[in-house]
Image 1 (cartoon, rainbow, N blue to C red):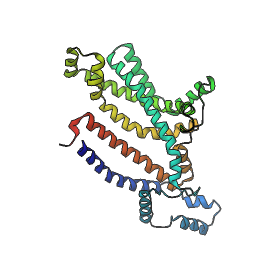
Image 2: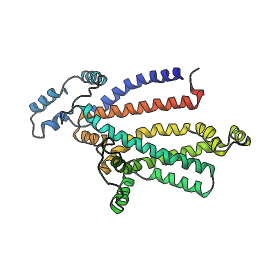
Image 3: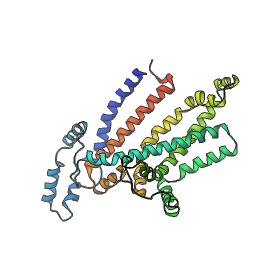
Image 4: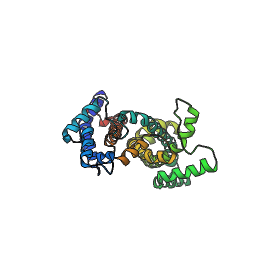
Length: 314
């Protein structure tokens, strides 16, 4: 397993190098000139040129890339063009909120998907299975921002059970943190739960038809033991794949959900940066998002190695 882990870590190095090229290049393709935006619509050509020189935008692209990469390796992602604030500081302020939201949504997704998928697979063809299948299809089809608005109308405005907007750090008050994070996390988690339920249900049905499961039942093992020890581990490989994809999807979905619920996470920072074409902030946020995707894919590969020893190198 250690050799498998080392091999997977080494394969991520060229991926990360390629990612830096892509992130830096794509952001430069965004229409508009930040120097013009900073200087103002009435600025002269000389004033715009002075701003470009002050920001270092007049240097060759390869020099800008090298400075950005070397700075990123030391934790320096540059400075915002508009707020003069370090990009790393802006990301550090918003990222914990987004991570807390995405993590809570992922836990809600698993808490819903695993028992529903098991029950649906064991009661295949019954009304329970049909309701679970229809519910998962509906959960995938509903847009998260629309679902969030419905939750605000029902649970906040109509019933008054939970706050509609705002955020309280868990370090200040865990109870208030839970009440503020629950609705946005549930909004994000439902779509993930729907997809996870479908994948896990189909996988469990396939595993239940295997000979070793029939043998285990013929030996007189309890159904709970058969499911927990023999079925779930072998049926969870597709679920691991879905969870790996959901981690990155949750970060993207959090941008919209944070706007609906007024959560001051990374989504607000990203929207402000795109609106003003704040190139260093955009590059920093995209780089962090890609790093999360690469790490999640690495964790998925390691989970594969644990669940299925056949994928490990000999």
